[in-house]
Structures are given as C-alpha cells and as structure tokens.
Length: 181
Image (tube, rainbow, N blue to C red; front, side, top):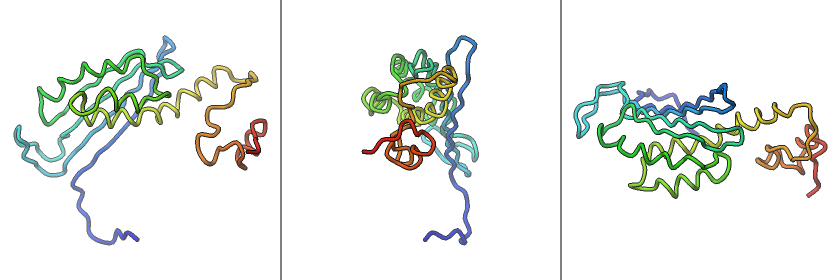
C-alpha cells in the first residue's frame, strides 16, 4: 500500500497533450506535445537551465485522412538540452508520411527511428498517437455513415476485454454482433 501522508516536493513534471483539428479540406491535423520541466535550476553540459523552463518541449504534427493514413509529418523541437543538435533529426520524421496510425504504426516507429536514427523523446511521443487517433477517427468515420446499416463489424469490438463479442456488454449494446465463442 502506498501512502501519501509523507511530505512531498515536486521535482519533475512530464506532460503529454494531444489535440485533433478537423480541416476544411476533409483532412485532420494532430498535434502531440511532450514537455519536461524541472522545478529547480539544473546544470546541463550546455549551460544552466533555470527552474520551470522546459528541458524538453517537443511537438509531433501529423496530417491524416479519416482512415489514419499520414499525409504530412513534422517533428518540431521548441526546447531541447542540446540546441542546434537535437533538432537536426527533424527531417528524418518525414518518413512517417505514408504510414497508417491505425496499422502497425508503433512497429514502424521502432524500425525507422531506433537509436541514432531518431529522437527517443519524439519516438515516445509518437507512440501515444494510435490510441489518441482511436478516440477521434473511427467515431468521425462512423458519423459520416450514420443511419446507414453496415455489414462491417464495429471497430471497437474485440479490441478489449469489455467489448469481446462473446461478452455481456456486446450482448447488451451490440446484440447483432454477439457471438458464442
């Protein structure tokens, strides 16, 4: 059991945020941001970083279609510990173009940007994008075909234990897709 009765002092904060924007051309912009902040001054090899100034402030910006195909990609380094060096890898992230966020995306990140071929922090940030995309793209796609019957199994079924097709939630909320495995 973990207790929080002991006095605590915040020393580091890592924040992730992901925002989706619909565009008037039918595409979507996804902006994912990672920020690391120390609450105290730190001495880096490149100089002193004052408290509460980001040591990492990174952004991945993707343009995707409704199916999750990546049309445009940018890695943006707004704050880094080795300015002039960290951001040199940014052009490599154009290799995201042509990938699909909803199909083997994480595997492609590991293959294309491992070690010196990428930035560990940009890679970490990119890894959260498929889950975030699942919160937007399938729902928007479904909205586009709303009120039409489809023979295609809803994307969310069999994606987790609660929505397994032989389970009670599917029997109650998706009776047409109930199976008896």
